Length: 141
Image 1 (cartoon, rainbow, N blue to C red):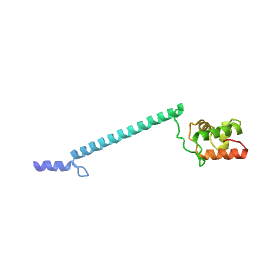
Image 2 (image 1 turned 180 degrees about the vertical axis):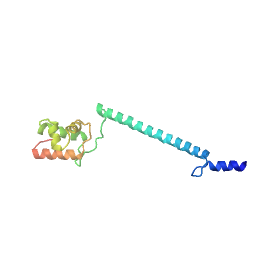
Image 3 (image 1 turned 45 degrees about the vertical axis):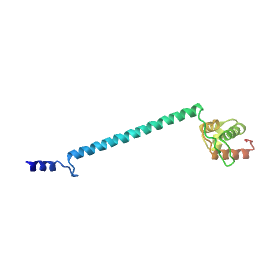
């Protein structure tokens, strides 16, 4: 009788050599680990979405202030760079964002957001703006 039970227990082992009881524990362990990882992933995605919405709302409301780091090697601040873009637009391109966008190789929406301070101005835009102003004889400083 005991030998028959051992034979039956050996027959119940799967191809890995595990008994069904150990196999169910392994499945339970994988399930618990998967739920833990899934919960962590859901938490991180929710945090990212919340912070993105808050930052977008701050930018759209005008409350968010970009750091005023120098834009180029001359030490131009973000505020001064936006003023240069506005002066170039007003004095050299008939106050047209579309014309300035074509000259700088940017979209009109980007020019509007750069000159209003909603987007960070990089050194490429300022160097191009100063070069265009120099070639056309426009005083932007």
